[in-house]
Structures are given as C-alpha cells and as structure tokens.
Length: 126
Image (tube, rainbow, N blue to C red; front, side, top):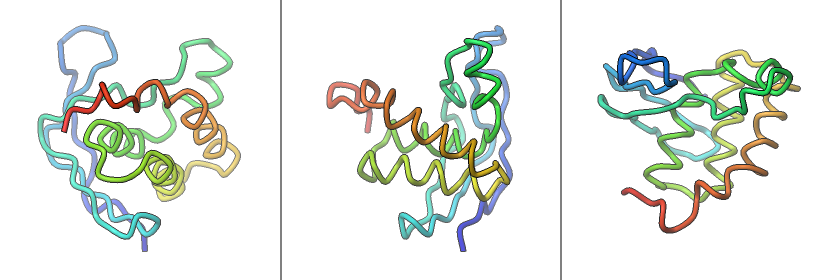
C-alpha cells in the first residue's frame, strides 16, 4: 500500500521569502504505482508545487500536498523513473495525503502540460 514512511521536515533554504525549502530529514515514500520506495535525502532543495502564483490557479492547485510535491521534484531532478511515471507518483502521493480527486487531476494535468520544459536532457542533475 502506498504510504509516506516518514514525515516531511524542512526549513527555508535561503532565509528569504523566495519559496525555496531544504529537507532537514529524509522523506521516504513507498509507491505502488512505481513499485519502489523513494528516499528524498537531507539537503534536497525544493520549491514545492511549481504552481503559477496567479490567484485562481494557486487557489485551485497550490499548497495542497507538500509531501507529494517534494517527491515529484526529487523524481524530476534525479530521474530514477520515466517522466510519465514521475507524474503518476505525484497523483498517487497526493491521494495518500488526502488531496481530493478533482485537485489531484488538476495537479496532474498541470505537470503533464507544463513539466516538459523541466524534463529536458540538459536539465538532468543525477
């Protein structure tokens, strides 16, 4: 059964209000859809959900599942799975944290439409 095996622990990465966060403890997520367990390490930096700060868009999809967003950022940064699977993990992990189905679908559609520019080969870091 998909589950977060640890709790999200993070702090502001820069001391500024720039939306950057750094993990202070590992975040471990067991994914059924990927058939594996992902460990996001201490020190990993994230911007959480990269939702445009347009009021309606942010109200609909922003700030809803920080845990799922961290795992998704990690998968996009390290690429241990294909992009389509990384996006499926976002949807699955959001369900685990109790995000309503309609909001999970909005988030998933958003990353399918807007995530391609962050998945280009020249952006790989691992």
